[in-house]
Image (tube, rainbow, N blue to C red; front, side, top):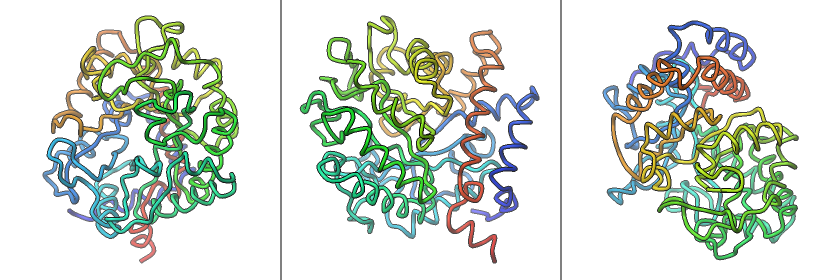
Length: 382
């Protein structure tokens, strides 16, 4: 992998905020704006110049990537082998990009953590275990997690989970210890502390799964998840308390049906929930990220390309495609072309795309040193 383009990382966060949004008015930049709306997974613990992910970064200008330790389909390793290897991988990815990448990972703790002890990373307790202690201790765990992620060039953690453990046996949340507590106020306090710890180390925090997954009796990885009969507005309390602080600039949607709010679409594809509840009622103007669009709750009923268009129409800014539950090397061209066709057909307006672009660029301006990993920073200083 060539080590060029380091000049791009010399742009400071403030300059990034001024320059990149200004380009959004040009029609020729539609593909760049659409590409920035994608966060995708890929195969490989290292990358070569002919890897599909390099094409996606350079030709389609994707906004970011997500790393996994395990390849679901093969059962083997995927992107994470050791701290040194991850550090090299993230530096190579950033070196390929003309706009700094979000490099994200699910590092919640407990059962859901991609950087594990067997690969040389420190242990991290589950959210439930953290919730039994003090908020000060939870913040320290957030700081340790943030330091570990920043050290290997990861700048976005899809955590903390702010789902309330309404049902302690909920298969995707309570049964896995992914919630801090059954009390929404306690969830808010501990999630805020963990997010503060992450941000103190320069790592972005992403709250999930809006509007609340903790009462679900099924797992959206496996199919339709309807929480209409079990969800309550109390599950919004952590969002209402944390979002005004500005500590968490991202929210991830869940593929959850709340038919009292939208009878036809799950939250990720629902304007009533994303735009109505999250943006208008809670006043959130940060970046909204979808949960993985390859989960069966989406693919079994809508299809990837159609779901991508509907999610953007609903108000989602970034589309997460893990490319792990399924794998397709052409997934980025497919989604970008579907979005381009939707703009051409009038289903999505250029103004709607530009609004997401501006939110994404504003968030990237918050990344330390323009989004560089530690190796990039060292190279600039050499």
